Image (cartoon, one colour):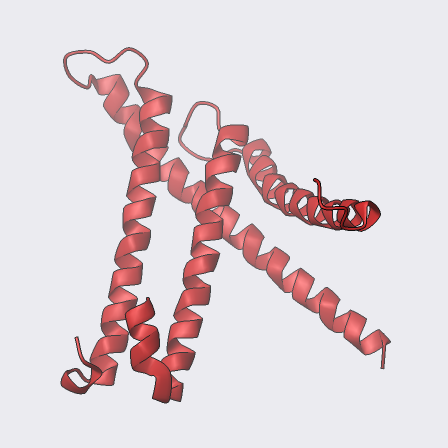
Length: 89
Length: 92
């Protein structure tokens, strides 16, 4: 991507375009990651359709994973504050 | 690949194509891994009918799961955006 960043230096339209495409790609990468994790948690034997319980599991899985990520970020920040930058972790 | 030699529209179109291709490759790679795990227990000399049917169903379920995960994530992003906008309103 760094070649593109050099090229787009003077071009606002190109810069905006690349930023949007990068964000879209990041969202997609995130979806792949969620699908990876939640497939393992929720899918048993593949059948003719996703039943209601499986759909609920997948949906909850995504939200709980995000909640977990937010919680860990919060508490980790608190942990760092408590240690007061003592250097050792 | 100098920008001067290529129309900007052409460049933008190529970038979109490459990103779409990378996404499709990731999708196929994951699908193959997951469905092999689900459907092939004891690898034999060929894929039998049961295994082939399982793989076919698994592919469809994988896409269903991907779409559901995608929708759930999109909804969550919207909710978080809405929540953060409300927080800004409250401070005004």
